[in-house]
Image 1: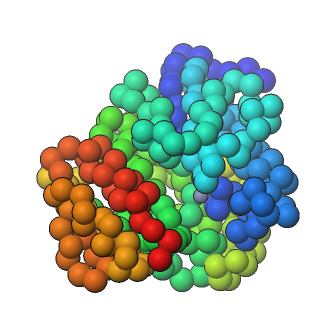
Image 2: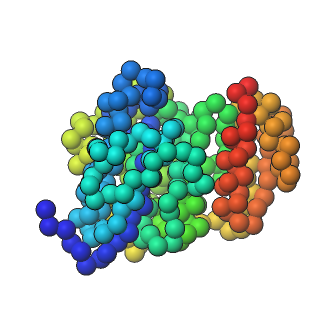
Image 3: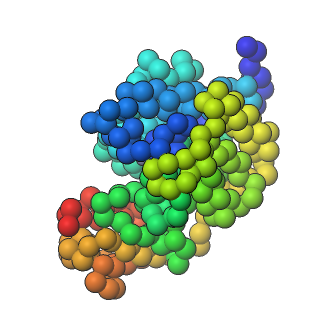
Length: 281
Ligand SMILES: [Zn+2]
């Protein structure tokens, strides 16, 4: 393989698991689950396909942040030898740890739709145990939207998203038509889907990343105007009770809280702290 070197691109990849080729059930994405050790290899294969695409379009540095659950899903031996792995949790920027303004583009592999999406594999927003919805400046967000705002904070555009068909639609509606999406499965419900053949899915991820990088200058970083108003609707009132103990966090309803920050990363970190604070019920 001859790689084009003249572009010298630096690429950040955030890899989640629910939207990985072949995955349809929570047993495949939790370490206790029967199929987990196979599914984590599928995850590495989808990521490696994105890495291959990036290398062929001139990437000289690729950082992959494992962004699911324990964030220790990708076995380092399984990752493409040209990519650098960020593994484990907690991390200050969580699913976006490692990004900074030195990167040229950001890629989301294996992402899933927001909580409450109909017919979509393992839909949730950050925490299936506590979050009903999260809005930023009035816009209800899937993880991809909030994480794209983190990338946008550093002036890095999100150029590619893979996952099921529904997350691809959400990516286009939030990030715009120019983001390249690859649907590796079409969901019938929360735990069933029609899968692309694995080789075909990986080929489309690689080709999709190449297409996105060819059009890199046409995709702008995703930003909203400050100040940033976060509205969090929890699943249970007890979770909002804990959240409202924090200064600047206002209770807006039985399950709802809101807060406003001037700096997006400050708001992102407060949002994550409130999710971590939420009791199981
Ligand atoms: Zn996940």
